[in-house]
Figure 1 (tube, rainbow, N blue to C red):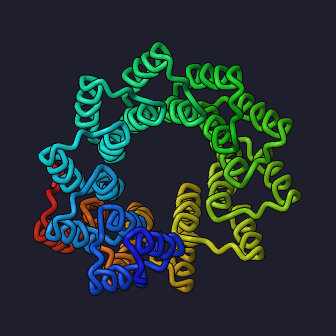
Figure 2: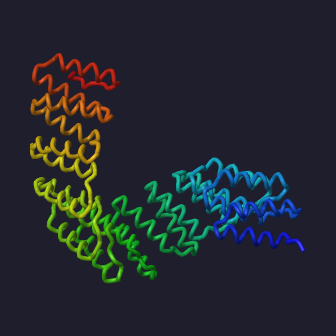
Figure 3: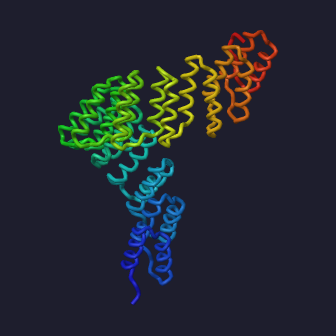
Length: 426
C-alpha cells in the first residue's frame, strides 16, 4: 500500500523540524513521481523552513511552484514569505506579496498586520506602519500587545516619544495590558533621550504590575543616569539589582566606570574595576578604554602603566586606546611620547586612523617641527589614509608661520586637486 498525502506531509514536517530540508525536498519530488500531489500544507512546511534559514530564492521558487501546480496559497503561505521580507528589510517585496494576497481574496488577520507593522517599524518607516495600523483597526482587527510593542519600538527608535506616550495611553484604555517588553522599550526610549524622570516613573509602574526587570532593564536605567551625571542614582540601582539577586554583568560595570571617569572620579571607577575582577567578571577592551580615558583627564603617565596591566590580562589595545593616549599626551604637550605611540601602533599592526594622524600632525605644525609633520603626512599616504581639509590646513599654516611659502602653496595646490576648499585666509 502506497503512502497517502497525509503520511507524506507528516514525513516532510518531521524532516523540516529536524533541519533536514534537502531530504524533505527529495520526499516532495518522490511523492509527485508516484502521483501523490502535494497540497498547501506540504508547501507551507517547506516555505516556513526556507524562510527560517533565510533562503529567499528557494522560498520564492517554492511559492511560484505552488502557483504553477494550481496549489492555492493560504494565509500561512503568505505570512511566511511576507514575514521573511519584513525581517530582512525588503519592504518592497513584502508589500508585493501582501497586495498579491489581497488580490487572491485573502483577508489579512492580526498576525499578518503585525508582521507588516513590525517590518515598517524596524526599518524606520513609521508613517507606513501607522497607515497599516489604521487599516487594521478599520477592518475591525484588534491590536494585541505584540502589535502595540512593535509600533512603540519603532516610535522610540525614531525618538517620537510624545507619540509613543499617547499610544501607550491608548493601549491601556483599550484594555491591552503592557508587558515586560512594553516597559523595557519605553524605558529605553526615555533613557536614550535623557528623560530620566519619565523612565523612573515607568520603572516604578513596571514593579507595581509585578513585572520583574532583568539585567538589561537595569543596565538601561543605569546608563541613563550615568549620562545625566546622576551617579548616586546609578549606584542605587546597581545595589537594588544585587538585592533582588540580579547579577550585574560587564555592561553594568563598564557603564558605571564610564560615568565615574566622565565625572573625574577615577578612584570610584577603580573600586568598581577591583570589585568586577573579584567577582570573576573579565573586563573587555571597551571597559579598559574607558579607564584610559579617565587617566587622560588627569595623569596620562599612569595611563601607560594601565596599558601594561591590561596587556598582562590578555586585553590588547585597539585604535581607540591609542587615540585616547595620544590625545592625552598632546594635551600635556608631550608630542614625542605621542609620536612613539603612533610607532607602537604600527608595530602592533594597528593602522592609525585619520583622527590620530591629524592631531599629531597639527601639533608638530604648531611647534614648527615641519620635518616630523611631513613624516606623518607621508605615513598617512603610505597606509592608505587619505588626508582631509584639516590635514592640509595644518600643513599650510605650519609652512606659512615659517615663511616657507613654496611648500605652503605646494600643499595648497594639492588640497585643491583633492577637492577641498581652503579657508578664506588662504
